[in-house]
Amino acid sequence: MLADMGLSSVEELFDVVPAALRLAGGLDMEAMISHRFPLSEAPHVFEQIGQRAISHRKIVFYPDGQAT
Image (tube, rainbow, N blue to C red; front, top):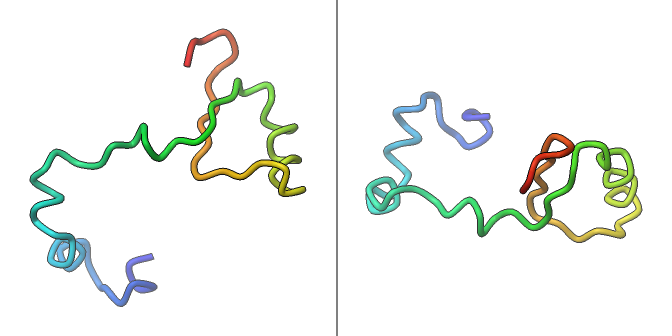
């Protein structure tokens, strides 16, 4: 993956990631998640993705019975 970005090490990656981003406490991961589903729905969700019936950014599957 690093080679795909033209990098040869993690240290090089840190050279190109702005220090302000690294020092600001990271990214708001919650803002990136577009959907949450119980794990039992995964086959149906992947089918919908394949049919382009769901527009998504990031999907989180959680164990059945657990709150999101």
